[in-house]
Image (tube, rainbow, N blue to C red; front, side, top):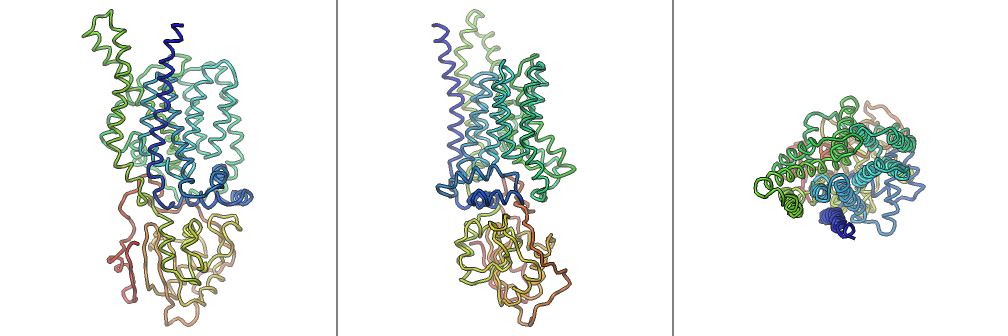
Length: 574
């Protein structure tokens, strides 16, 4: 009876340690979830998930197979009521689950207060909060990775094989949500090696991991042929490493330095033979997946912070372990100095809740320091574009029957996500819709047909991504080159309207042009393949994009970038 009574407070403490981070993450995730229109990456999810299952399957054979399972899942989520909040709710739930699982790891590997601190630190990290509000798969991948890590710990301590089946299935599903999660297996192998686990554990883990890799292999083969999806990535450098470290620890300087000190203290915990400790789990999880991907990306760029978001779970675990070690050392020194040795144990037990509350207050201070970042991240301007605002701006300018040219074809994403603003307009270059062609942005005509269509127009509206208007941009396809050539040769700019991430321009035919000129460009009337989801935009790889606009100025100063002899009306942001 005594044992049962003594265990009851411990169980309550463990439950509170897991549930409180879940509630905090849910609160932060739901805060500002209805911030407004979706942006480019979310638009890919939104327009693909609303297709039928056969249409999604058709798309995956051509492009974006790496997100196939996520698109099918979101198809079910959006079926009852497609909307911006519904698009992001699964990520909120995934982030909350990840926070709870991080706390559960701390509880199982150390003690309840460590789990509580680790889960809360995860919840208040701006990087976790950012992806909790993204209509993409990364928060769900982070939850799957944390769940698989917890199952690894349970499996290593269990004599049975049932847990390993669950482990293998969880790893497989997580990797199918995003294949770079397979690097999680390297971290888990390092954990088993550091803990010097016996052969039977290695054997069971190897079978489970091998089954997950086997399930992933078809996706790897298909996605390898779609590697153009990440052609926009560049090789990482030391600045990339520093940015990732600050994102894991917390960008605010008042948080970053203490976090690093505590993480180092957490690393110093010894690892007994045959026992998995918190440091043996957290350090490989935090370090290995990013380190391997960054190293590989020095030769073939594949790295982006979002692809290793799941490694974030290791950072708060290490910091919480370091805080626990510091608290225990301080308690021991104080008690041995101020309390008779006979009463030391009783005083230590009495101080445990006090230490837990002190740690929660420290996390609250970290949240306060990073609250401005979290607040800014919940405004539409913190994303590279707002496609709802773009569509609304286009709808105020276009009239039924007006011709529209998208430059490049991926600028069509605003029309696909929010078609109302383009209702009645004519898409000059489109040959087959995105749904019919099994692509993300549709299939466009070849240069010859595009020139013929443009030849009969006296004006055309161009919806352009800002990078497409820069002098250094070199289109990859003949059709995109033909767009630039015809607009530059036969039309003059009359009006410009700029919205964050997209520029709308009205071009009118030059009075001196009587007939279209073929120019020196090669004529290729074959359909143009779909372009990648992600374009070469300087914001696309930064989860905390600057508030300022790096693109050419708009408003009154935009006139400096237009031809001097062209009659024009230039408008500022709308």
